[in-house]
Image (cartoon, rainbow, N blue to C red):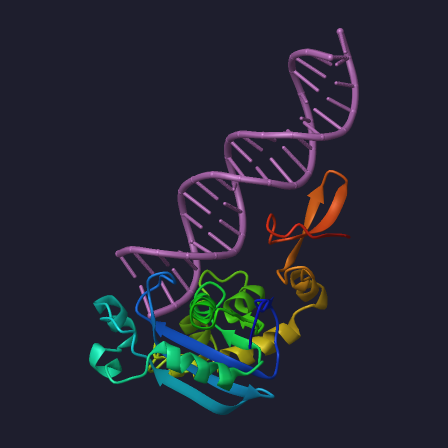
Length: 228
DNA sequence: CAGCCCCAGGTCTCAACCAG
DNA sequence: CTGGTTGAGACCTGGGGCTG
């Protein structure tokens, strides 16, 4: 949950997880705030519990953001702030693996920032980004937005861009992606899944002066290498 | 729309090698 | 030793994709 080491990204399927989604006042993890957080707890691929809470960002919601998520200032006026909601979410999530779409570059940034800001600690949960998994399954696709994946699997996108609806949609997508992963050749999965033991980032095969070697994609921050 | 990140491709840098 | 060449890693940049 909280500690001094950030969790690592996993690119694969797990049957037990907490899938979450945030709605925010914008796309900047420096200047913007969370206005809704929702999550579903999943055990053996089935939703067993839900969590959803509007958040008062203590500032006006920009028009452009309201147009996307349909959340207005009036709707959040009497809601708690994120300082109250985040501990509730963390209790709900426990030490489960967190799952979401494009969370590596978006949602996790907000969570990391606010955990640091409120508790001076890091979020230790490992996480799965379904965008990464989708890239693995459908490298030939041009787009892999959550709505594209939902449409591909015939999942209803009614009410999209509200956190809980997106969570449920994403949960079904993740279960379908799991089936795609099962169908994939082992070699293809393994080559993509080699993880750096130092920092948890994926490793990549590189050609060096002295031949092939595995290098961490976190270079230059992480300089871990392995022989092929 | 803005902001952020990833990724591929191009360029730069530097060490190794070799000829003179 | 010096200078030129080569090749691989480091670094930079622009385009594309995804989010609200």
